[in-house]
Length: 245
Image 1 (tube, one colour):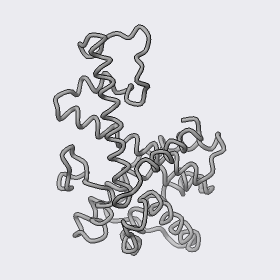
Image 2: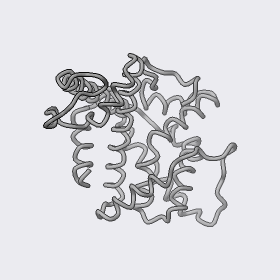
Image 3: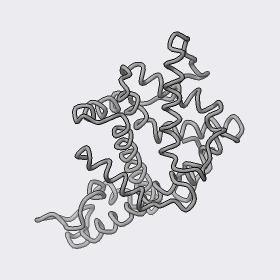
Image 4: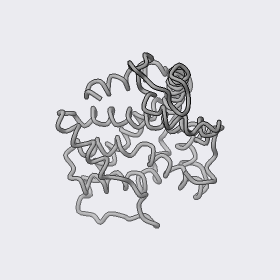
């Protein structure tokens, strides 16, 4: 995220669909920043889908980079309509079209955007894909699971920023792993971050509640206005459970 990217109270773009709009209609600098934010947020599920389609690792990396660096700067965003549906569905459909076009021009030289690609950790994404492949995931199922994991990561990042803004970074670090845990405290639990065991349980319960709020916000950002957040959360939970996540 660049310093000039419009931000909300907790330091995140107002919505992910707003990034789509800025990538489509903003000036060159705004469009570049919006595309980079979209890429960093959602490239891993797209990579999982590309690998699931049978693309070798190096080609899948190139296609995902190319998708953000080239395809989305052209006519793709001109067709993007926030009222038409979920950002999740839009990006996957756009990638499918991009891969079809890429296959049709397989012999053509790839364009490398000015300034190069966005730096991404493909080794981590490849390890995730290997686990999905071992579980027999279809390309679409791999995309859905990685999309869900990306949203969980975004929610944790939002929560961390929230605690840091309140001067409670140490408390968040101590309790971070409990964000996805159950409300019941583990047997024999000791205090964390200088708190008593009782205060730790209260703090952990509050952290889990705030995490759920952050996750709902992250999901809301990918839906059209008035979209069904609960239905999307159920779909994401099913995607994770299907692969034993």
